[in-house]
Image (cartoon, rainbow, N blue to C red; front, side):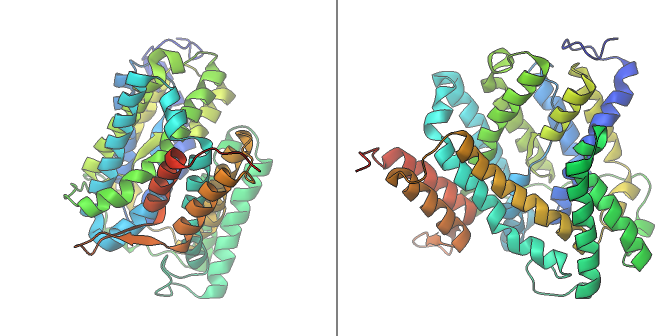
Length: 415
């Protein structure tokens, strides 16, 4: 029973290690549904089930855990407000299908097709748009209002105390934390903010008291909505590239080349099928979690079967009704404080992808691509579809615009 082996060996003795991996992912996993109005119990279930699907597709060869993707927070919030949860889920399922299509492109033309279609000059600014477009939501919630700023939920002074305390705890844990704590800054921030909320009497336990200990997650089926598909599907561009980076990271940690075996074509396929499944049940899209990769590096637990135990634990916890209800009692300002850092971090990831690729942003072609993606995405530009009330805007427009510009703009002399 060697957890440091990279061979898949499912043994009861590793169950506790699996639970530890889920603990590392837990804060980020439940944050997405809590911010978007989805059911956190469903997110737990689909994270576990999605990880198991990924392991089946990759034949249990990669020690990664799949859970809620931050890249889809903005489109889910907008989609739920516009089409409701079932319509939004249709768009999320389409994003999963796009993952699958990209995996087939890689299978047919090799890994280079991703670099040609989705180079850093496109993906970097799209990721920046994802973070920047969410900034008002974070500030509104941190100051005691609803995400859209339409109603006040708490006195501003009290809300700022809660949000800034949660933010400070998250920042300090991220910078000063050691060992396992450095991997769970979001979880620490939520706990600290929640404890302070209890002291202020700002927690409403009504839902917790009404919930049963054991109950089915609130599964929701998607409804066909082509407008949601056009709006959300392009968002998959950014996490598809991030997936490539995640595979490089876990390959470096375990010293095995997962880009060759099982191959990026299969890991992308597993990620896509996991996202489709999640969307069919009412959960957020899945992505590989860098926090868990960090835990693998820290603990040297390379056995992929440990992630099977983490997935099983997530599925079982999804049926604990009290847990799902407890998560929904977290006050909005606590979440808002953490979101301020989280969404800013997403923006920085986009900038860093450009820096690491060594892109010269003063080169006219690069300048045009980045400028148009960011300004049109953040500024709210939207294009109408003739004969319909639908308008393509936000991250979807930014993603499509970036791909098209990269394909059509000539790489001329910089005179």
